[in-house]
Length: 211
Image (cartoon, rainbow, N blue to C red; front, side):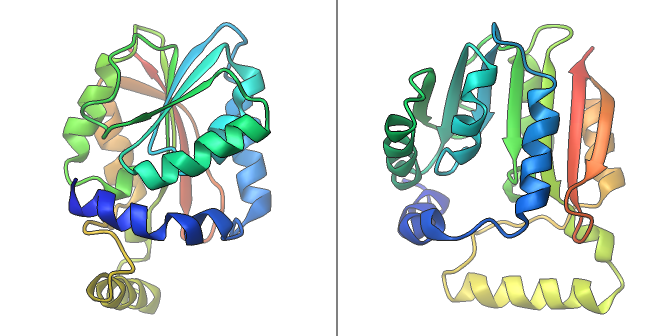
């Protein structure tokens, strides 16, 4: 088990009970994502956490494979899927690079890309799971947009202190929007929609089509 898996396992109960910070932004993200899914689609979600998003979108796809490297998170997700009668959501324990091969009609990654130590490798792996025309749908906190401000300094200090206290994962990348979108395009995608939900941070929502 990796250090990150142990971290997420440890905080799974607290994470599961924590309220969504910006419920309006989350609901709008779900709404935009639903608009791209078809009831015949096979969907892969990477870094699904406790499964809330996969379960919320279950009725919009034929099947969703929800993956995470934390067994603790997935256990919560399985219980939630059972309670919600979301029988078309399957949970698997794995990281991004060893996720199921597919092919899938869509791959989703919400609040994940900034936590990956090798973004380029992750995006290449995602692209390999999609046929031409397949969709990559993500939302990523772009902490790097605050660079040079007091907010950026506060983020840097807070995350460093949280990591020392065991309250933050081992890697957090301060991505900016330009860097993120350039990496997605280099991986073989055409970006077809973007937005910031929420605007503050920002949480960069991105839909890209495999070329």
